[in-house]
Amino acid sequence: MTADFDSLWQQLEAIPHPGPAPKPQPSTILPSRQARIYRRLLDGRQVALALAWTAFILLPILSIAGGDPVSLWSVGGIGLLCLCCVLAIPTDTSAFQKRLHAAEAEWKTVETEWEQCAGPRSFETKKLQLLDLRNEWNSLPDQEEEKMEALRDVQWDTQRQQFLSGFPIHEADIFNVGDPRLKALHDAKVKTAADITTEENLARIQGIGPSIGKTLVDWRKTLQSGFEFDPTEPLLPAQVDGVKADIGTQARDLELQLRLGIADLERTLARIQKVRSRGTSTLNAEFDQYQKARNEVALLS
Image (tube, rainbow, N blue to C red; front, top):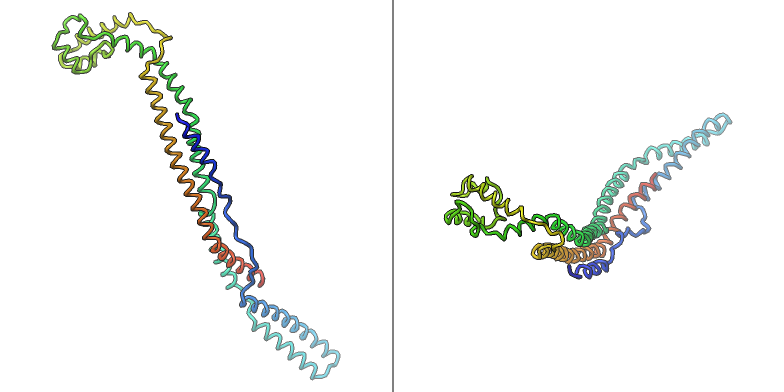
């Protein structure tokens, strides 16, 4: 393994976190002129309702007290006029409620999209994926040791095969195995005692048959009885080189993935920053519309 991965990881750690998505800036949003006029009408209606009740309460009192007809007619007229005003002024605020519901739904949509595009979630997700690469990189020494242990576990079989491969079939004096059968075995890649497996496999070779197959297997077993395992013998260099080459390939692949991941993470950060710089004004405008609708409903409540 090379040290490129560690230097790349330091480069990754130097990429700053974008932080949370900016929130809309609070501002003083006044209700619309329509809502303010409607509020004045509602206030006037309350005053008119109070005057109407007052007039209708005063009428019987003045009548009992012997008030003059002019006063009674004046109070009655005022009460009637106020009652007409109460009935004429509308109290339905459903249009403002509908406007608030629409603005609230629009704001929630904008807020969700803003969090997805301007929030740090995509950045954090990509960085977590790169952290998996780091963990896999750190596990490479353990993987190499496991592969070496696996080689040691099969070292007996490896030594045995190496021992048997030192006995070419054409040099052995095996009964009834002449040049034609030697050629058939050679064509089937059965050249040494190490290549001899089972009687069934040998019997499939043209010209060998079960009898010769058994003879060859018995010859291999006779040779194998002279094999002695040496636990101190080092692993075959080709096997060790194969393991190291495999680990090296994994290391280079992880380095390439990390290099590409860093570039992708930098692009993600740049995209988030671009969205924030260009979209903040739109975010504030949408939030102002929502706040305006809320203020209107609150004003009319």
